[in-house]
Structure formats: structure tokens, C-alpha cells
Image (cartoon, rainbow, N blue to C red; front, side):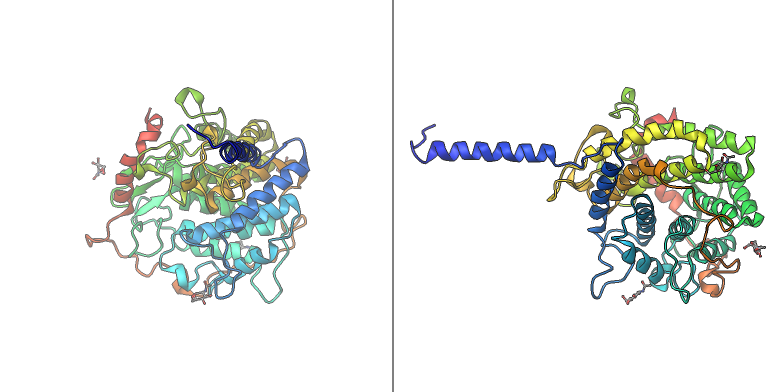
Length: 470
Ligand SMILES: *[C@@H]1O[C@H](CO)[C@@H](O)[C@H](O)[C@H]1NC(C)=O
Ligand SMILES: *[C@@H]1O[C@H](CO)[C@@H](O)[C@H](O)[C@H]1NC(C)=O
Ligand SMILES: *[C@@H]1O[C@H](CO)[C@@H](O)[C@H](O)[C@H]1NC(C)=O
Ligand SMILES: *[C@@H]1O[C@H](CO)[C@@H](O)[C@H](O)[C@H]1NC(C)=O
């Protein structure tokens, strides 16, 4: 190598210096997080939240309030507003409240039950329910109430609940909610744990908030059906769903958010009943969810960091976590904190997981143009551009802010501090948004059930989830 004496060496040195500077910057540019310092947790949450809101376009001219950019489905937008209500609650930062309120109110639909016509034809019960959980959180946290002439948070949650009770289907598998609401959608003949678990949790939370026992009875019914159907195993593993044609053909894959929905629902029922039976269920669900935290002996990376075992470590393209799945860990964190609040004795079991996870997740926010964009594989501190986006940001946001749980109060109720106005008959004013268009049995061969589709997906996915079968 020949370097010209005046230009070359200088250029080489300056590129080396630039490289060093860049390496230095990259090493520093991750979300700083000190879990023993509340201000540090808040600033970390602020960075993760801003990263998530980068994908929000609903506040721009000509765009639809409440919606994020493609490829994020409508349900995930509702999930994101739930995360942002928590963000406001934990940090007191009102920066995004205008967008949150505007989005939540824009999407309520004609019957104020989160079945807006633009998307309702493709909606599943789980999709609608995630918006229901967001407004339920708004009521429980005394998030600022909408103007009096608009639907109110509690009534919206009741609207979602009421419309879903009308879809409880005893014609197949002895009960349960179907995944999809309309017969023409793939997934109408699939009953899944996220739809039933979300309904279970929403009912349990409405029971506590309102003190109305009807909700508690529905929560019990949903839980019992999950056990009877086999979706909640004797070992308290939550499986994904069953095909309604036969009710034994089960997709046994486990997702973080399915476990989370049942954990929070059980915690609310434990709190209401103070019973040994719900304590045992809650404890067992939390124990079973330990597989959602990395075990180094299984090659999953840093111990106790939250993982999405069904897809996170897969290397085949078919097994990668899709945009929905990239957000699931957000909900396990969110729902585990509800358990801490409703069953304070679980704090010593849950918080060590969420502390370890938060540190690993913040550290993994070290890429992108801002140097603090988050990725998905926290337990291996593996940053990949394909795993960046709204779901990853939301998941990191929820695990970070969950570490502020001690600094906030407990969810309010109608009797104790709650200001949101309810309506027990909400959400039933438009029959098209309540009942499936057609509940006749599905026979046509083009209505291929999601059960079969997921069965195919599962065989591709099980590579990374082999341990679930043993
Ligand atoms: C439905 O779509 C129209 C046309 O894009 C839009 O103007 C409207 O805001 C949408 N409404 C909702 C509730 O998304
Ligand atoms: C239900 O489906 C499973 C899996 O495809 C099959 O093994 C079983 O025999 C079926 N049961 C009935 C009663 O058709
Ligand atoms: C219910 O939750 C409240 C608020 O955290 C708590 O004070 C109370 O002890 C809980 N009840 C039970 C049975 O744990
Ligand atoms: C309790 O909830 C049920 C179901 O929504 C409703 O029909 C009933 O009127 C409620 N009862 C009271 C006292 O609000």
C-alpha cells in the first residue's frame, strides 16, 4: 500500500478518527435506563413512546385519526392507544393525549362499540376487544373524560362487552367466542384464546369497576369454557385455538399475549372474590408463563428476559414474527402489571422478570437514524432492521414503563374515584355491528378455516418452539 505523503495518511487518519467516533456514538446511543431512578425510567419511556408515535399518521391532514401506517392493522392501533394511556398514567406526560383521545373517539363506530364500518367486515372479536381494553384502562386510570356529547370511556367498554355477549356461541364446542365475527372471513370457524381471553379480562375488569355481578358471571363463563375446551391446559398453558368443525383439532402454540390476558383476568377475579380458587388459578397461570422468559439452557439468551418463544428465534422466513406478533410482548408486560396491582403479593414474582426485561430491552434500542430505535430479540441483544417498527417500540415502552408501577395508584372504580360515565345497555343500537350477518353452518369448501391455515403455519413455526411439546 502506497500512501502519498501529504494526502493519504491524513485521509486514513481522519477516516479512522471518524470510525472511532461513530463506534463511540453507536455504543452510547441506546436508551439509557436506571431502574432505581424514576426520572430515568420516565425519559426512557419517553424515547420509546416517541419512537412508536413516529408511525402514527392519523394526525396529519387527509389521514384517518386513530390509524397508524401500514402494515399495522386496526386492532394494533387500539392496542397502541392502550399503551399510550398507560404512558400518560405512568409519566404524567400529556404530549400525546390529544392524539390518543382523538383516535379513540374517531373509531367508535355508529353503535359506539368499536365496529366502525370502514374495517368492521374484517374484524375479529379480538380486534374489537383490544380497543375495549384501551377505553377500560382510560376509565380505570381516570384518563381525561371526553366532552359530554361524546361516548364515554366506560360506556364504550360496556358497548364492546355487550356486543360480544351476543356472539357467545353455544352451537359449536359448547360455547366460546369465535375468532371472526362474520361467516365470510377465514377464522369464523376457529375459536381462539385471544378472543375469549380478552373478553374474559374485559368482563372481569368491568365487574370490578362497576360492582355489577353480571360481568363477573360472564368472566367465569369465559374462563370455564377455556378450560372445558382444552385451550387452557391442566398445566395452565394457554393454547391458541380450536377448529369448530370438530372441536378437538387444536393449535397448541403459545403466545405471550394469550397467557397475559388470562393472568390479568384471573387477577381481577382474585381481587374481587379474595378466594383460594382464583389465587390458585392466578399463581398457576403466572408459573406457566415462565416459558415466556428466556432460559439460557435452551439457547434463548439472557435469563429471564421476555421472549416470544413461538417465533422469535426462528430462522426460516415462514417462522418469523409478523407485525402483529412483534407487538405481543407489550401486552404480557401490561397485563402482568395489572396482576401486580390486583394481587400485590405477586409483585415479588413478577417484577424481577420485568426489571431484567426492561434493562435488556432498553439496551437493544440502539439502531436506526436516531440511534435509539428498538428491535425485538432483547435476550440476545440482537438488533435487526427487519424487526423495527411500531410493535417493537410498543413492547419496549410497556416493559420500561411497567417499572414505574409503584409510583402510581391502583385502578379506580365507580365507587372509589372513577369519573367515567357508564351505560349498561351501550353498544347495542345497531344490530349489524352486534350479530354476525349469518350464523348458519359453514359448508362451502371455499370457507377454509383458520384452524387449517394455522395448522400449516404451526408446522413451520414449531422449529423454535419444540420445547412446548415436551
Ligand atoms: C372511513 O374512511 C373514510 C375514507 O377514507 C375516512 O374519511 C373516515 O375518516 C374513515 N372513518 C373511520 C372511522 O375510520
Ligand atoms: C378431529 O380432528 C383431529 C385432527 O385432525 C382428528 O385426529 C380426529 O379424529 C377428529 N375427530 C373427529 C371426531 O372427527
Ligand atoms: C385488591 O387490590 C387492592 C389494590 O391493590 C389491594 O389493596 C387489595 O389487597 C387487593 N385484594 C386482594 C384480595 O389481594
Ligand atoms: C348489570 O349489567 C347487566 C349487563 O350489562 C345489565 O343488564 C344490568 O342492567 C346491570 N345492572 C345494573 C344494576 O346496572
